[in-house]
Amino acid sequence: MRFLNSGRQLLDDIREVAKLPHLRISLMAEAAASNDPFYLRCVQTQYREATRRHPRFPLIRNFEIGMAVCVLPADHEAYLRAVEGAARRNIKKAQRLGYQFQRIEPNKWLGDIRDIHQSTDVRQGPVRADVLQGPSPISDPPSNSNVHDYPYFGVIKDGRCVAYASCLVAGEMIGIGNLFGHAQFMSDGVVPLLISEIVRYTYANYPRVRYFVYDKYYGAGESARRFKRKFCFLPHRVTWSL
Image (tube, rainbow, N blue to C red; front, side, top):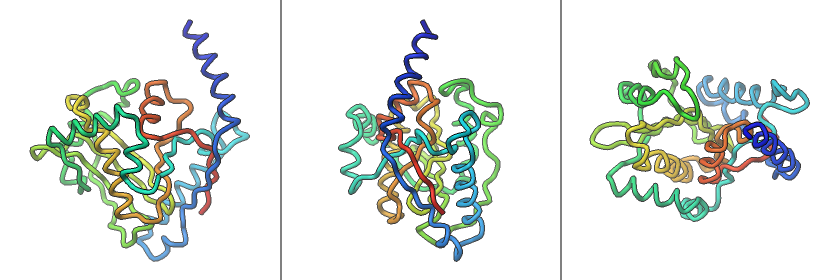
């Protein structure tokens, strides 16, 4: 039965791929020239990874077919209207329980971040050993531009970080690098709050961003797809430019 279900899913995916909306996302590399060289390297790495041949399907680019992208609407209120009702309820629950969002300096929260990583050894599957160990200190230089950045965001309560994300801002894109919530607090809606507030922060601070990218859609399990759809991360065909 599992084989039959996976076969049906593959056929459904093939049919869907033919109808995917097409986006062109500019990473605006020229604007990174006046920033710290770190940001130009980030842009070049993103472009190189996106445009290399797919490891399993060499006729397409690695980040071309089925990227999970939220095309940002006019403002944060429009985004909240677009997400599923269950997502809005989770966001409101976290707010009601007193969780707060902020941009964080990750090195000040390394202990909490390590606790988040180690709070469960299963996240959509077994967690890699290096992830369970937690992060090393971060040495990213500050950005002097709102076109390129590498912010970290956290959800905080009672002086404790219980969810965090790192994101690459590159021209028209803000892309999630890491996104983790502490297993003990997931039912409080801390990750939905984190995603929603990243969108709010993006509108306020990164005026060039048009697309919120959350890795690939195809290849993920149904629970991961369901989670992405809930927050408007839908599959697209993407052409990348520097």
